Length: 308
Image (cartoon, rainbow, N blue to C red; front, top):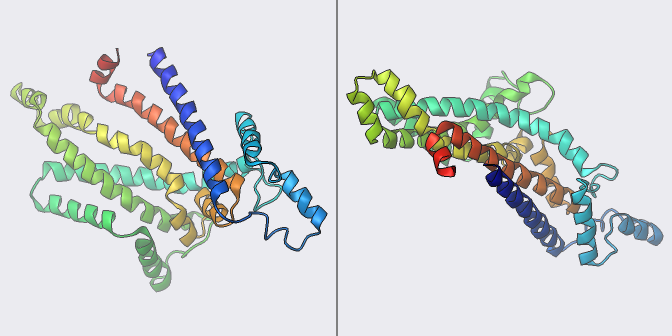
C-alpha cells in the first residue's frame, strides 16, 4: 500500500509539472502584451523597469526557468493586472468564497440527487421514476445562465423576496446555491438510478433475499453501498467543478470568487494569475483523485483485496 501511495504521489508531481509547462507556453503563444495597455503612456525607462520586474524582458526559456524555480518554492508570482497582489494571496482570498457557495450547493445537490436516484430505481416505470428523470433531463439540458436568469426574474424582480446579486449577507447565497445545486441533483439522480438497477440484478443481492433478509436490509447493506462507487467517482470532479465551473454564476450574481478573477485574468492576459490558478485547479483535481482511491477501498472491500 505504501508503494502504491508513493507511486501515485510521483504521478501527481509529474502531472503538475506537465500542466504548468504546457500552460506556460500556451499563454506565451497568445498574441498580445499584458503590459502594453498599462505602460502605454509611461516614460520609456519606466516601461523598461516594468518589464524587468516581471521578467518579460528575458528570453522565453529563461522566463520558464524563473517561473518553475518559483513554483518549487510555492511562489506563483505577482499578478500583472493587480500590481502588488501575489497570486497565492489572491487564490487564498477568493477560493474560500467559491468553496463556500459551491460546497453548500454540492452537498445539497448530492443528497437530493442520491435520494431521488434511489426512489427512481426502486419505483422503476412508475410516476416517481418518470418525475425524477424529467428533473434530471431538465438539469442536464437547461443552460445554467438560463436557470440563473429565470430565478433572478422570479424571486428578485417579480416577488422581490431575494436580492438579484451581491455579496456579504446570507440571503445572497440562496439563489446561487439553488442554481448550482440543480445540476448536481440531475447528475447524481441519473447515476444512482443506473447503478442501483445494475446492482439489484447481481447474484449476491438475490442470495441475500433468498436468505430471508428484509428488503430494507438488502437495500441498505448490499445494494446502496455498492451503488455509490459511480457517485464517488464523479464527486471528485464535482468538487473541482465548485471552483472551475462556477465563473458564470459568480459573474451573474456578482460573487467575488476565484472563477470570477480567473476569467478576468484570461481576458487581460494576466500570465501569472492564469498559471497560478491553473496549477491550483490541477493540484486540487489530482488530490481528489487520490482521495477517491482510498474511499473506493473503504466502500468496496474487493478493491482492497485486488490492491493487495
